[in-house]
Length: 363
Image (tube, rainbow, N blue to C red; front, side, top):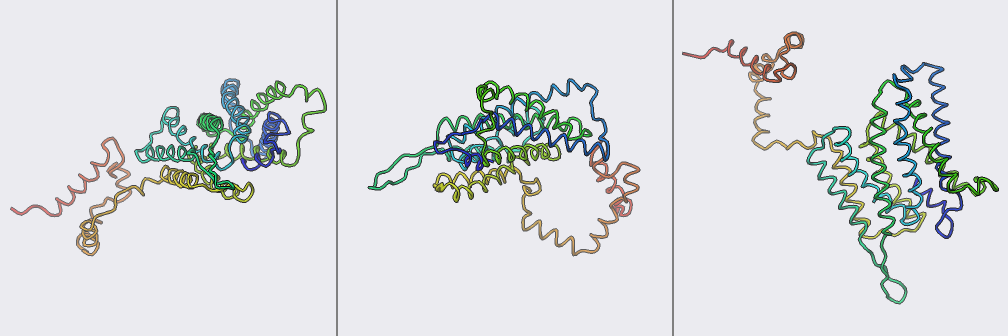
């Protein structure tokens, strides 16, 4: 997406076509695609509970993410006038920090200490990308180069809006799990079309009354419209069937692809700051998404020897297997060690009682 937007700029670094019209056309295309998919779904197998008990309240609830995406999508064009696509992808990873905080605030999801450390690493990576660089010009003079402060601030705003819109959209999409995702998308994109239509009328009123607003759209501009539409539909599916963390991880992969493509398309050099920031952001994203079983400490040499000794002792193996209750009795009595109000203490005490009955103490 950032690459296509950068390719659609003119020689002066601006856009010949209308930015609000581009986002409105993307929302309109998403609305048409979602409506078609919804009609197809209703023709084959009618979605259960299409309307909620309060349909108008549900429709109004989608106005907030619609407004957030309206601001964020238009902000993207102005950001890419200030920074290159690779730097934008790096800075936009700040959405991971905002997503983690909003997860805790809105969805009541707790983060582990490792995940909080990953967020700190992410903040360091984005800060490193903003360190000034110097390049040598003809004659041996050093020229100072750094990313635009306006671009950094706009990217920070875009990241916070993206995280807020994503978390709120996930809450809405998963609030009614039985609802059709296409119907939920239709409600969201109706608001998107409405907000962007107001933006087009406000900014490009003369073009609407004159030769037409689509006159300046070229092939690359239409490619941006199509990419934004497909990207929005993909994000809705991820939020419905996965979560925001999966979305953030996908953005990290996109950052790698964007950097490699920018090397060839825009002749953007890889500075040491950019390379270090890329490593930090990638490591932070991986650390944030590590499964819990990978964080368990490795057994010591003594514990490994005890485990090997127990596996080689047939009497110990037989005793352990005989102490385990069968599945039917565990389900019937609730002594499976992890079920029931008393937790796993029941299973261990029952096994100890059985062992004591078979091996009474010597007097």
